[in-house]
Amino acid sequence: MANLIDGRAIAEKVYVDLRREIAELKTKGVTPGLAVVLVGDDPASRAYVRSKDKMCRELGLHSVKLELPGSTTQTELLRRVEELNADPSIHGILVQSPPPAHIDEAAIVRALDPRKDVDGFHPENVAKLVLDDPSGFVPCTPLGVQRLLIESKININGAHIVVLGRSMIVGKPLALLLMQKNTNANATVTVVHSRSRDLEEITRSADIIVAAIGRPGFVKADHVREGAVVIDVGINRVEDGAAERGYRLVGDVAFDEVSKKASAITPVPGGVGPMTIAMLMSNTVKAARQSL
Ligand code: GUN
Image 1 (cartoon, protein in one colour):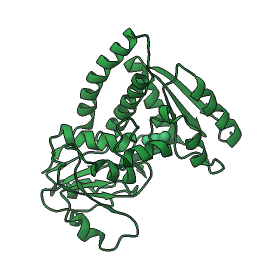
Image 2 (cartoon, protein in one colour; image 1 turned 120 degrees about the vertical axis):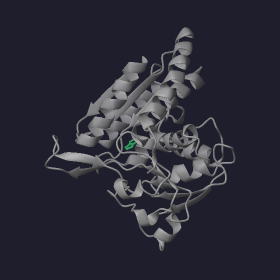
Image 3 (cartoon, helix red, strand yellow; image 1 turned 135 degrees about the vertical axis):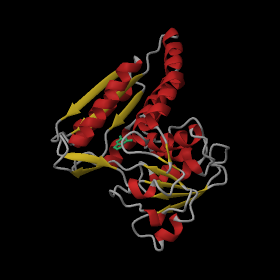
């Protein structure tokens, strides 16, 4: 049976360090501020935005939550972003993805001040990740996955890490982060996705598997070598008549069978999720520090 990697406990450790840094910034007259923008009323997105706002308050950060109707136009949204770019009390801006279909998301991301882009989605920050420039912002979920591995004393250096999924939010930036030239990375990274041939053969050669494909229970025991580490980024809502809300959350990994084979595994919920929020807070504090 695999060791459970407790994302909530590791996130708490991150918050201990962050609280100290926030107190220090406040003595310099700076309260880190985060603006979260949500367009439309997707229930999962609303839940994420609520928990980000709540965590800001718990840490004593300045938090602005902008909930705009689904009918908000591109022009209006751009105007809101410009306002936040110009607002000195805001150090980090996050526009919740995905926006409604009529919004050109790439154009919104390009309009963000890259110094406030705590999601790390702006082309300037993507370039800094490729160039190993530490002044940029790295997307929160990849940062959270790396931190989970480090805090769990799982060796990344020289390991073969197979990332399932090539999204702009997780797979692609995670691959770039883990292959960087430093001792918290130096991994041999393989990225597989929905069009990959011999996917199972590739994942079976992994020391560490990171599943980020958004398909419930996709990774089965047959994908996993005995003793591998499995990190589950998936958060999928599946219908469940017995559950209070009518659904339950499951990851991209078939937990029951894979946990019998893996040496360590993250649960869903309580694995990567809490780390993603912790890294958003960390990026916001970094943005405030760099604004000095
Ligand atoms: N939607 C799912 N994950 C994320 C994220 O990390 N940032 C933003 N902006 N939207 C998301």
